[in-house]
Length: 387
Image (cartoon, rainbow, N blue to C red):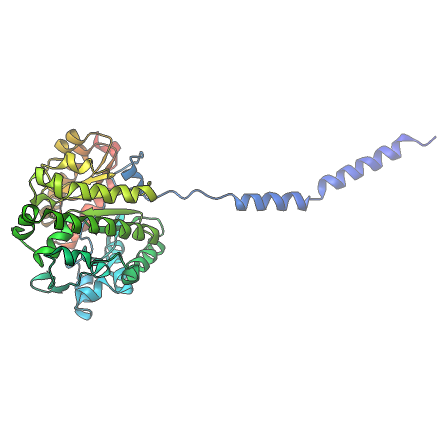
């Protein structure tokens, strides 16, 4: 009969050897599984704030944050004097859009473009004069002209899509990339008046003299601008702002007829396919329209500087995000004055659902130092510091 001791020693050595040798198949599989597990990338602060998620501070960007107040823009404009060249050339769009990003690192990087940019893609030609601004020679005054308009030709705005895609790569989720469009009413004012206007006499008269024509034009613009928003989102925009710049020129009753319904039509179309992308609606001079702006279904209401932020929050409630609304002229003042204004807006907006911005675009001649100070403050002042 064999002794059990040698057998026991042999088993012990085999056990020790087995334990010492790695098991490659199991380890490699574990590594592969670990590598295949997607790492959740946190969305930019501005996107989260717009959706109403808890954040530690209000994100900040500025309307017209890329523009003539910056020396880098003025130097570039000397080499490329045509605005349409600057706003319709992918490389220039990207470079200009990134100028404030490189200088100030805002929480939003907005596409350098113009609300009229998509008009040629629907059949409306325009030019921009250095002194007179946008000019449209063939103004629309008949139903036959409206019928000649066509669906948005995306091949004519490819520079926008390409620029947005490049901006997403450049910014790399450190800030939100913003697209924007004009509202149907605001675009129609240019198409009917032939350019900028102070009275809007022709289009306002048309509300009564040719309502069918105006409805047809606004409906077409609503559908095509909804397509344009979707194109921007698909190209990389993480938020989109709708500028109803001249909506405030309408009395509330007329806004309910000639702006609101077409905005709702746009928003509903976009939300049907891109429900989680925040949409912001900004209308200059809209203090009497705030509740109506909210009713369009947007995620964020942009405020101009004439509205007290506390009043706006009280009127609109805590279930919608607000944007704004520091007076842009304060950026010409001292650092202390800028900080007082910023803190006032932040306190009144509350510790959630707020995007810090100006109540209008950065003004020409604004000191870059003032812009930089507001951006610095936005990063320094946490919600916990405001109580």
